[in-house]
Image (cartoon, rainbow, N blue to C red; front, side, top):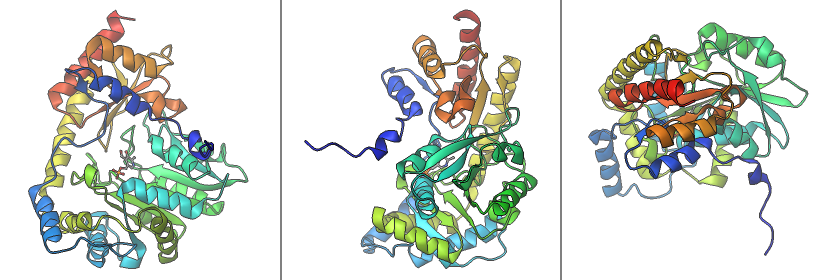
Length: 384
Ligand code: PLP
């Protein structure tokens, strides 16, 4: 039997999934490991998909997306993200945020190029680089706030092979929302060194205290690509739809990548996405309010229990620091699950900066979050 290809062996298995698999074996586990909204997709969006399928929109779509959706994306970016103007040739409809990031990386990186990714950061920001034969290099975020730590951190890891830098705002796992000034500083630094910027804004509408500014407003520059998603805002994780925004020539290049992966995004899903972006936006606002209440409850419980944490300003995660001597968080999360039936994501899955951390999802009932936190505090006190 011929050997399998080696490139994909570089991609580590998901540390979050390993914990989730163990949690599924526990019938009564409290699930705080995954970042998935706990609301169903609103009926109006489901109905739009049904109508589209009944109307025969079941064939291949144009590679970059149906015109109605590219236009709806433009209208949304003006309405919700404050872009002054944008045209459909600056938009690529993608298979979720992950599809946009994959096409972005493929479009700008060659074999062995280096791409700077946040530490801690969403695991796929590094693993997509490995999957396309490039090298992820981590840059440190500010441990106290989970946000940008200044250009010195970037400069420390830049080499002659660096081609791109990624930011993620609001951040998974820290919940930090990058200020305009921080985004501008990163953008200036990237422009100075001739680097691409890839901005992952899959949580763009999930902010609590002040709106997230999109990178292309905070730091307009031609060499940038922003990936958005409908997964978290509408909630549509299983529909697999998002969009990427960049200059027309960049979108054309990314479209060529997408043609080799999926030809085009699921056509029925695209019609559902038109409804999501153009229809009533109440659900997104209600969810934001619910997450804000959970965030407040989580922060006050964690503070009362003397658990060290960042205060998330967006997304839906609580990033907790464990005592320094805990350096194997994969083991710790498993032990905690076995002992207390609470599933959390081990910090090490998010990079070396997460070695003594846990991430708790706030996409769960408030009572489950508070229960998880009090179990954690008790477990730390009594069983270690
Ligand atoms: N970016 C970040 C930071 C995420 O946390 C996720 C999902 O968890 C995604 C992108 C991609 O999600 P999707 O592919 O469902 O849009």
